[in-house]
Amino acid sequence: MKIQKLFQKTRFGIFALFGLIVLSTSFLCIYTVDTQLSAEYASNSKDIAKTIADASVDILLNRNLATLQSMIDQFVEIQGIRYIYITSEKGEYLAHTFVPGIPEEILASDPSSTEPVQRSIPGLGDFLEVGNPILAGVAGTVHVGMDLDIVALKIQRAIGQQVILISILLVVGVLASIWLVNLAAKPLGELLAYAVELSDDRKQEKPGNDELFARDDEVGDLARLFRYVSGQSSGSEGSGAPQGSAR
Image (cartoon, rainbow, N blue to C red):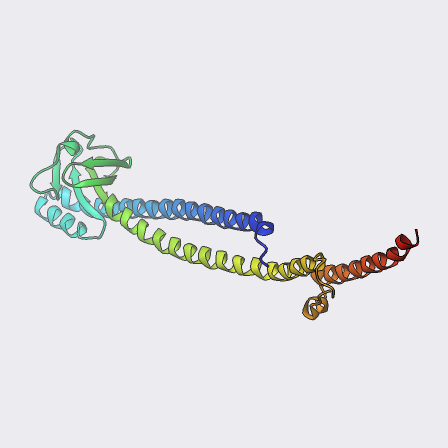
């Protein structure tokens, strides 16, 4: 005989607990990975902008713009760096990697600003732009644009691997919980079957289950108690019959 209703709330509680753990862990992983990777890429972009700014001082003093253009073309080959442009202290565009020309969104921005800003450029995508002054802004400013689509792809891959691992743990945990609940329900089912058989007045002999009586847990104690109570009830019925007939 199966025990179903008794463990319905237990199973639901286990499923809810595992679901809460998976959701909270997933959100924490997503937030942590997104924050850390975004901060890492922003820091790398800032370092690249500073490196270009330091290397551009002599080039700008010599007004060798061809060398300056060649240098930023090499830096733009770094994964995640989508564009670089350098402006003078007067806001003139000295060198850039845009093809065929500088987008309107860039032209409309403040060329001397070094604060990180997110830009959405039609035809190119979404970017995180950081800047670094050259000689404290006296010689101009370097601007580096980081492709956010690449950053998002890396974040999705990192999060996807963790979510797969968490999902596997969820499935294993749920299956293990079902097995454990069924393991506890099996002896209770046997006990219930035994109690039903004891209450069946049509059976002349009281049933027995040696394995059930041999258990040293609460189920075995209940089984032995049922057998004892059943024996007492039989004795009472047997002694009561003669008294009724004497009247």
